[in-house]
Image (cartoon, rainbow, N blue to C red; front, side, top):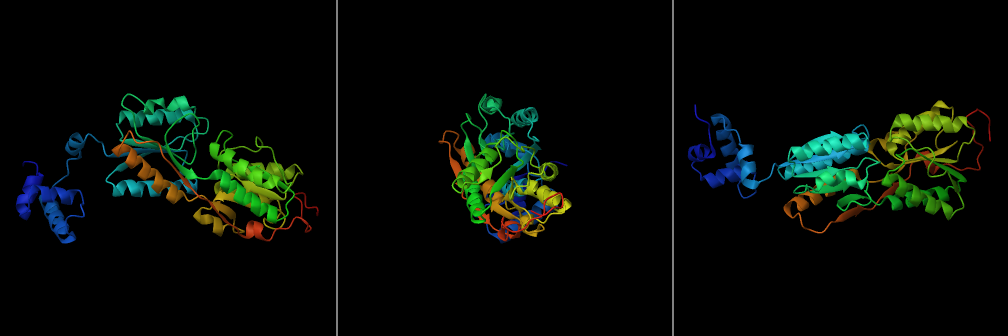
Length: 350
């Protein structure tokens, strides 16, 4: 039996081939009633859309690559879903990979996506990425690229992410209102621009209140709950219990809260805890977590739109879509007062 083509569908429906083609493209120019009738005939006749032939006509693969560090962090899950939805609405399929913050693994993923001729790549750079490692995206013809969440100094590309310096400042001003005396920043990769910016904004706000902040280079780690828990246990056992522990992300903060409870302390009373990202589960932590919203869904949507615009016009000037953060205060800090009697990790009272 010969293969069913659009011309056969058009004849069976009594429509032009152009009209059936618009149905395949899900064009708004065709009524839903007509679309339903044509799709019913397609199913009955066993029509299969020839994506390869369409790609040859448009010179596009209709595939976009996405590289993030991991998917265990709820922030990345929400980000990924928003990107995929926006691309799907535009007719694209998403090819996804995870670098685990390893530049060498990132290089292999980029190479694979270029070899598969993806129309573009959305990339959350691995923390130690040198700008030169992305040159494969520049040649030979160049692959449209958008960076998300972390900037890469020395690499000129479209970018979207939250204003991390402002996010740090918002949290720092809140901590000042608590009259805290000491703050420790926990977690986040050492060479992450997002970590640097959050720390910088936090330090700027705390300095105005004369509040001591742990050195930038201390307590760096992958952005996992396990690392947040480990660092917090080490911190509390050292006898240098701070008034406030600020986690690089809500994923890290989950581990911080667990370690605080495990040490016989109460978060929000004995030590205040806060994070960044305000993922959906932050309000369901025990106690509910104070966090700065960084809007991963909006970041993902903006990233996809920037990439689609870059694909359509490779010569357009680079653009940055910076998203304003929002502080959400909850019980993990709201009622904390450093002058109240507090239990230490050893069980003594301060």
